[in-house]
Length: 384
Image 1 (cartoon, one colour):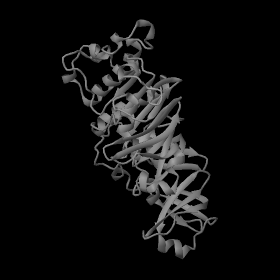
Image 2 (spheres, rainbow, N blue to C red; image 1 turned 60 degrees about the horizontal axis):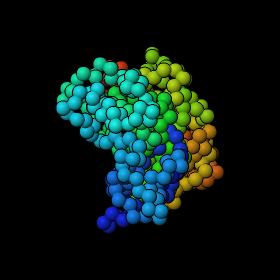
Image 3 (cartoon, rainbow, N blue to C red; image 1 turned 120 degrees about the horizontal axis):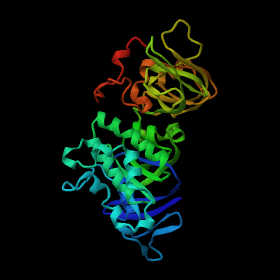
Image 4 (tube, rainbow, N blue to C red; image 1 turned 90 degrees about the vertical axis):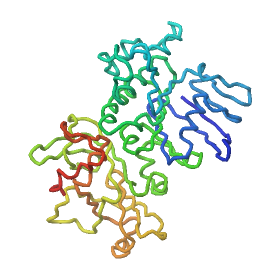
């Protein structure tokens, strides 16, 4: 268990937060300037804190009241930055073992062979950083952090400097790291797609404070948090399992408590667990079950919450379809349909609206080039 309590001013910016989290990957999500990097730097010991307490598994790293403030090198925390920061004059193998060599043998939790296998970098060991791709460099940086045998791993936007292809290359390794090492991870990101794919829990930061904390599904389903999670991209996050693939029509079926969602084909094994993000702006509502429609995803549900009607022309609805779903329609439509909490509705989502990034997977086709400007919809325009 990691416990963090900080109240510190950096110039005119105040960082004030009190939270705790356990194993798995916890994402820190928020707008630029919300305090994400300040927080992880404080945990790492890279920022001077005048008032605070940080504890990892009963090991006190910082307690300003008791005068305890361990320096970074004694905190046993691994840190992966946006840039790999490898030593250019050292081979990959020597970069990997740089921090490991500073540890007594009885404190080393991993062998070089274990980490090389985890990150699939055996073929890179004799090369030098200048010859590596961006994704390869980050894999080496992660491996180096792990070989320092940390009790906690901090990752500050590790994919921010990578293009779409190299992001997709490294995401599976972060998943393996999360699932196979048992190491608690704090992962800073401004990409909701990364958070949805990787995080077990998330903390939403705003103006130096934690606005919300919990599972990704719970935080993303809160209507009151849309100004912070991104109003345009707001939507529900749903846990699903890959049920089947229809190669003839180019569709994949994802099952959940609400039934099955159909979306353009994703190349993921049957039985795989997928977090699906359904954007509020892609959900339409009807009072009666639609007939003879091109829309493939239709779910019956009950409205449980409506966002306050302010100056915006739009209204957000939280709908129970067996899982929480969020819909965004105009105020005019809301008034004409006389929608209220408790109203029964049919939620409709075009399959084509659920593009590949809504599953956290950048590519839907093994030969896809991963172009960032490609929404993934153009090859599926016939799907509704």
